[in-house]
Length: 349
Ligand SMILES: [Zn+2]
Image (cartoon, rainbow, N blue to C red):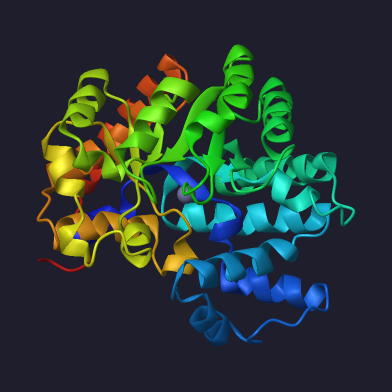
């Protein structure tokens, strides 16, 4: 089977994906009509153009507009359902999905944590039943908002974890002016209650932010972490401890971290032996998908099928699943890789 076809059909796991930022224009349009809200475009192609990333402040504007359309439990159900359909289409069997509950409640527009939770969980049940896709939530602290953003999110994440729905506490937003050390209490509290620690670090700030996340937040996985490439000592540490990095290539290019995709450090980090995973972050906003991110590894960096399989297996290894769940997934993925390799392609290379 031809390698692009293999990538499209192979089973996948995704660990860095924002629910709000993964809302496709079709769903955005439907919600805008339902709530009688005007957006800068009133059809799908127009919305796609409006989504098209120009700079960080435009990105935030679009993000806020999308998040403003989520106003009741039904909205959360339908967003998760559309998300699950997209997972199924890409054969993404398991996702750890970042969601930012505080952003929906802090302006007191009548949305409650309970309403969000019930909507998300109903959506997750439908995802499993209708699409056979599994997901767990990673509630994240919006680091640029004032308290009680951090303590409220930690408390909420703990409650969701106790209900079997959340696996980790996250930390998102712009790292500039919001270093990890400010969130020590929230993460310590979450860790004490059995949650994992998965903050964003090393995206808009450099290695010092990753060190801070490791030392102050007990980070067990780093959201992005790409800028570890700037610090040989940090690279050595991350390799020795096999701390997983959730890399998002297209997102990094759109945000201007590197001038073009061929200069992204993904292949260096992989070949150095770090535990790297491939992810899509906010796919419609960056005009990408998880499948597309895997294709970049082949088309731009010349990855072989064997290396692609290794990256896909890294995501299982890096997931916050129990050891027996990981073994079962690894076994299923390996069997599927073999089956696909032996299957005749629709078009021969
Ligand atoms: Zn992110």
